[in-house]
Image 1: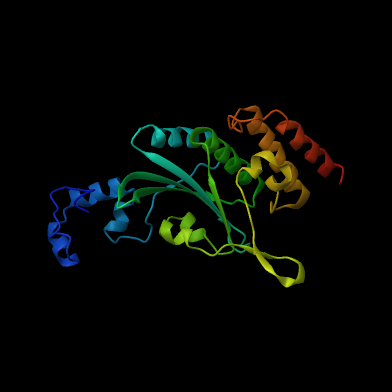
Image 2: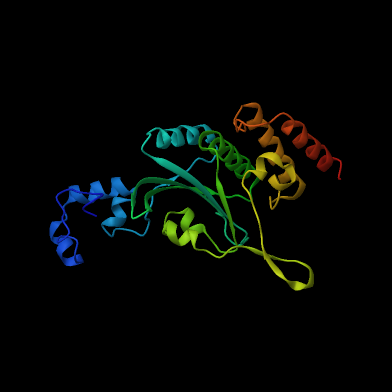
Length: 249
């Protein structure tokens, strides 16, 4: 804490919780909240929400600006991780975490976390908006990590769980032949390049799938699905799947 935070604290001050309490002031608490990107209300014990939630539903352009600001400094490294839950019983089923690494301690990175929540990923409109954010991430940062879990994640989407606990959730499994289980693989980039993967687990039947693809095409035409890579045939691929759904194929 003294090395990364300062504010007049030394090793003796952080030796025990009792000693640290004697040093804490409102200014130090606010500085700590700002430095580690946690809510001052949580530090003060007012409520259980640890992180501010950044909601970019219907606002992919705002997400692009936010990510750009985080990535602007040469001394900072931002890693994007998208966790998707297969549990159908909870509304909020996806969390996008921007992990801002700002220093190292014994080769271990020191990070602050920016939680992008509020996603109802099974809903067609939310799926398309989140896909636009995935494409923006790929264009700005070059990669995004995906993680499919069978556990509920709504508490993390509301900022009420530590990101480290989110990362430690169990993977999602599926049954294959002879009742064996295997980890379900999922790559967020597939929503951009594979129309069938994009509409997987979208609710509301064919209406949901058609609406999702139409919204994907809207964002593509606005340039928000541009990853900076090879996008030549993407539009026609999605239109073909759209036609097949409308024709009942």
